[in-house]
Image (tube, rainbow, N blue to C red):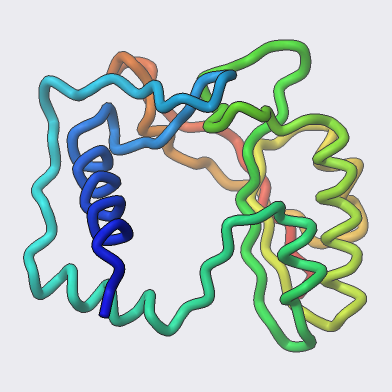
Length: 172
């Protein structure tokens, strides 16, 4: 049987996802949730059948809430596929793109490069998406780069929602 506390936490998360600005989850420097409620554009809740299908698909997955380096070192095996979409590093300031009390740092990018090398060494495939910038180009220069335009849908004003240059870095 399911733990009633876990079910209630899931219900709260679904409520926040559907009723807060753009369905995002973000915390402030103290780790407290800080996304305002949306006064409009609240998407519909999933139908029961959709929810059950999603739950069945997730039941087959292994979800871990942990540091990316730890997860990759413990879980990645030969022939696995690893998709990485880390937070964006922006030097010397806290920006809206940070979603936790601990911003993604330059040291985290160095760790990310180390993780990519380890995934590659183990014979697994990876795909990394990241904003196009000199730092990521340098750290992942030994692999295949593709440039794409990614639509940004999170901004306070609709007029600020545009396209950004990103790179896809892969070892296959």
